[in-house]
Image (cartoon, rainbow, N blue to C red; front, side):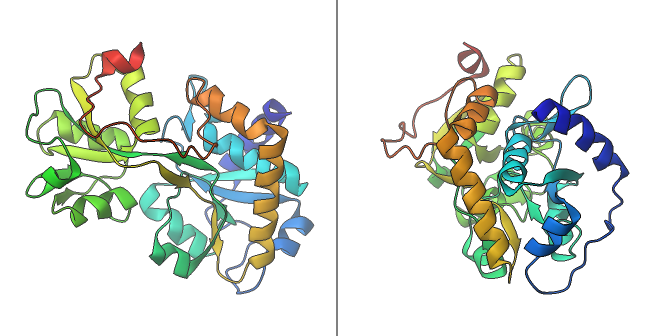
Amino acid sequence: MFRKITAVLMAAALAVPFCAAGVSAEEGDRLDEIMERGYIIVGTEGTYSPNSYHDEDDNLVGFDVEVAALIAKYMGVDVQYMETEWASIFAALDAGQIDMVVNEVGYTDERAEKYEMSEPYAFSRRCILVEGDNEDIKSFEDLEGFTAANESTSIFGQMAQEYGAELDPVNAMAQSISEVLNGRADCTLNYETAFNDYMKEHPEEDVKIVAYADPEPSSYVPVTKGNERLIAAVNDALEQARESGELAEVSKKYFNGLDVTANDEGEAESESEVLTPAEIAE
């Protein structure tokens, strides 16, 4: 089923203009409009492995891509994807060009005031990545006075600044790691799942994870305010995907057998734990 949808959606995603036909920015619940049009329009990056990226055949794939497909399935509609940089993704939502964002969106009070937020569908830990020979940063408290490469509007960029780091603004995770490797930044913050995937794919890179925050809900689906019926439908779809086991299956597919959709109340690993690409790849 997903393969068929993917083929249709990839063609549709390329064909959908930035201001999609049939979508308006007017206030009011969009659920009826979506059901009438027969598909949801989902904003995602397409450059954020393993959540949303292109495979070797240039197909849009990833954990969040398949989560969006599951939401559509249980809502009884199709799905189209609009790929955009993270810095522009909420502007597209605000403008009514997309119905929702499915792209590992973290929770903040500011976002909750502006958007209807779904129940969380994934859980992870924020962590710090540095160059292999960096011995100055070993905890979040050590960030003060150092430079972090992160997108300024992301929860990671905000977190780095809250701990006193200067910000080197970037648009993608791969760029943030490049900034660390070329010496323009001392560190970068992200979820462990994203860093683990990068380090597994790039075992030659001299980087390491040096600190972890506690496990937390890491992925929500935001829609614009006033869409209570739509967010209820999204939550219902996510619950059905969870109960069917499909949500866990998708997680294990993209996160090396790990079910990040389960709310693990266990203890976090020590912040002093250091993981290198070679260890991640094992």
